[in-house]
Picture 1 (cartoon, helix red, strand yellow):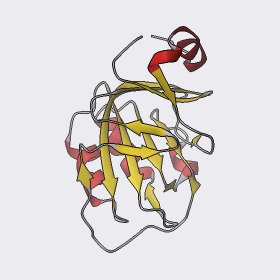
Picture 2 (picture 1 turned 60 degrees about the vertical axis):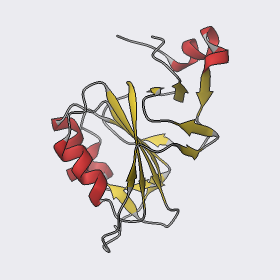
Picture 3 (picture 1 turned 120 degrees about the vertical axis):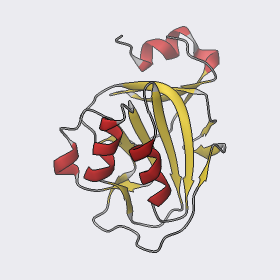
Length: 159
């Protein structure tokens, strides 16, 4: 089903929150929609790897908040896991890498930008918690729509 975030905002303005500026799509899909799965990372992406590699993502979008240090948490391998497990997209309050390789993987990937390095020390993340960034609160189970105009969140599926 095709949708446009601008149309959803026009028709349901009281039901949507719009992610603030600064996030770009680096993935191979121009649109994504789905139920939100949240994860907060403390530098290392090992918990995100497990989520994308091991869990069914059909009808889901992963929203990731990362402590604001300059390193990448998603690259080619994680995007391949996301594709293999049918995730619609990933939205990251952080950075990604391998942009040349991921541009053809049909999963949307919204992030603040790119960074060549990754964080090595293994740390634990938290799943299923409310996240807040870019002027939006992301709750596990809420619904996300994203396209070339931006990312919006609603409490329930409206399209």
